Image: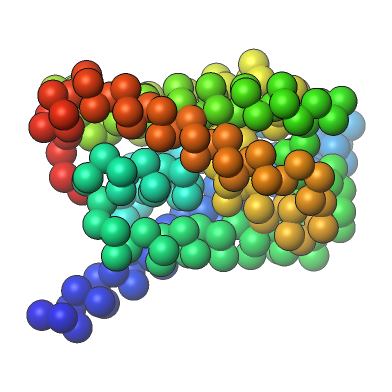
Length: 230
């Protein structure tokens, strides 16, 4: 029994790593191709790619790992009581490895074009980006909890709701903060491109925003009694 549990856990971590790899490869790849093609993809196109790939991954890998692909989401699920503590570290490490691998492949393919899609505050205004990234991740996590985990939500629409939220937030706030909402998504380009300016905010702000969403949704779900267990 112990071996089977460990094996299943490793499969979950592999799915998280693959999913995060695809997310970063497609999303930041769109940023790079947009730069190379003189704006052929467009900002709205990049936003669509991020939202669409998130939706696709939720439907394709959600039944394997829960489709976190984001350390802030993993920590929020743990805080909500629907995700076991012993899996948290393996998930976060897997997500980070997947993101770094995606950025490394993009670097080998294109070089350091478009800063590999790194997230940076507009005009170096880290405080503005910190506040906005916190709010963006709060909204995203609220949608995740409400559409993906609440028993009262319509079945089968979580991927669409979450993907649309990612695309929407990237569309209207991407030019200001990069609309990361995901520490792993920001880590990949930072590590491979050696771009560390204000990188800390892309860890702390999403985690804080997700935790605020957990605190609020606790009151909307009868102390999480209405949430499905992963």
